[in-house]
Amino acid sequence: MKPEKEPSPSRQGYIPVETTNVDATTNKSTINISTTNSATAITIEAPSLEPPTIFQTQQPLRRSPPPKRNRLHDIYCIFLCLVILADILIIIYLLMMRASVFDPYGPEIYIQAVSFSLHNISSAYVTTKGEITFNVTKPLDCAVPMYGDIAVSIFYEKEHLSMTIMEPFTQMEMNHTMVKALFPSKISPIETWVAKRIAWNFTSNSSFEFPFDVKATGGLWPNNGMVPQDKKTERFLTIWCLNMKVEIVTKTGVGMMIGEPLKCKVETETF
Image (cartoon, rainbow, N blue to C red; front, side, top):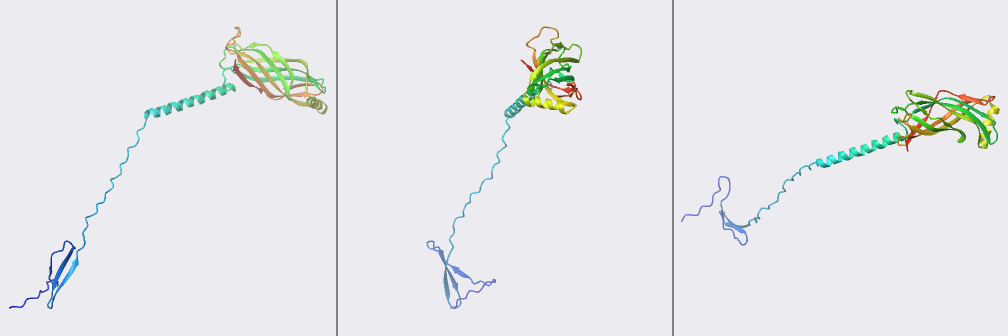
């Protein structure tokens, strides 16, 4: 009887082994290794295999399309802006008309010459007399303007010194019209401190500067000419000529205008 051959190593140096079946209950397998001296059995527990884990992949985010522009809304916004702009322009125009800026019916008026006198100064009264010449320029959109019932007053330190009514006049073809306001001699009551200031000027100087304000109010009919006055087209005219200066000589009490013609502020309003 021939002796059993020992397993010879393979060319790679491995020793052949014998594997038994895997026990399904314990998930273990037995490996028999034969050597020259004895046979060795090794039990190896096989790793448990779990099913692969399935990961849910996140779908790519969808970009929402840009919102569609509402053309009707845009048109409404543009219309609203235009309405607001038009209202602002109308308000500015009315304010300018109120201030007689670019008023087509507002004449341009200057004080061209002045003669004014002061006499009989007491502690509470003063006697005044004078003459003021106005240069009236015809308004741009007035064909034949008529002026009437214009009351002219003189103020010194807010004290009313004198008042007169100008005669009505009409501007036909002439662009500039010289009109006079005549102030008759009048005794005017004044405050004591005002009378003392005027008296001090007479006693301390050979001549002195006497500033006063002129206010005139009346009616203006832009295109009436010589026809009867129409209340529908009448405008209320207000004229302010501030800080009108005359140089009064103390010996005579008479003063003349100083400097260039004084431009007056003119306001016109409809009734």
